[in-house]
Image 1: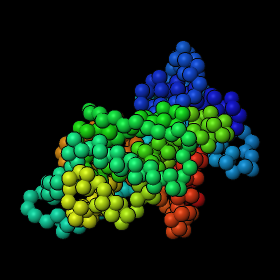
Image 2 (image 1 turned 180 degrees about the horizontal axis):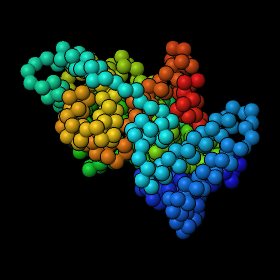
Image 3 (image 1 turned 180 degrees about the vertical axis):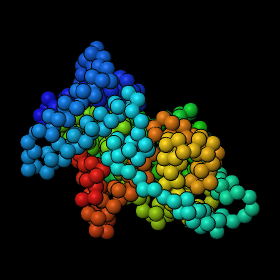
Image 4 (image 1 turned 90 degrees about the horizontal axis):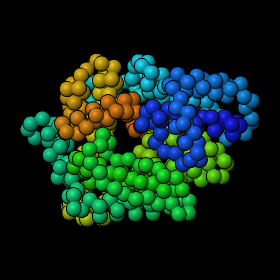
Length: 404
């Protein structure tokens, strides 16, 4: 893989970013490349044509026997194919939900029948008994664990310290890495990591809706340690700086990279805090800071485990909604009934569907694929699990390669 091919790819990603403000999630390469792209102002047709030529060039290239160079080659070809697909979508091409997820993220989420989610509901009925709709009972139960706004920063910072300490025991972090936290409103997402380069991130936490106690560790791990912040910092250190692979200085959001990024960030929560250890830590530290009774932690996480089992209900809602099988109101009803979301949270989720479309598969399907890959290679050894996880974060591996 030549540096010229890598440079051409970066410039095409930046060029498409001029047409799609959400496309370039992070860029810390040469500033004059972005300036050049803005001056040239390639049309979508030109970007698509240049990207096809670049992909053809990579198809014809000689592949070396070096495993990392092979990964790099296959990764860049697939990323370029996703770029072409995104360009076609912006030009008006219509894809089904599954076609889009395959084209952009190199994976397709399973189809779960309605009966599966009814089964989860039945288990929740036993855990949260009472009268009235199940969703209302679950929401009322969870609202008892909504972190008071004045305590949110203290709880979140305690969670960050714990996640960082756990990660540092197993992963050597680049010197000088750090991030800052901001609390924002009026967003379609609950949290976001904006990677700045030089091992720095800006993490934003959306406070539009109540933030429940489980989200402290979830967000601290997912957005920070060992999630997005560590993923991006290791990619910068291992691939951009150490190997000089400049294509990794840009992160196109609608690409296979996102399934690895989101999946590893979600699975990283379990790596850092297996459930039993997490409950014990939160009983000792986070529940008291938030003002909650630590003796309620076990039941809270029993309920939360069942809610997590219903996460694929969000994929089904997105698939049906984006394929025009149901309208917005029906999507909200599905999410409240089977994903156990409040109406306000369900409406926020539909806003996410509108903006990010099939991206939703990256969280749960990505987590499952990463978990299966890591645990298959780790063989149940906790130390080895961290090693395999770390190596995945610092390598250009595709979603479709996680089954190997």
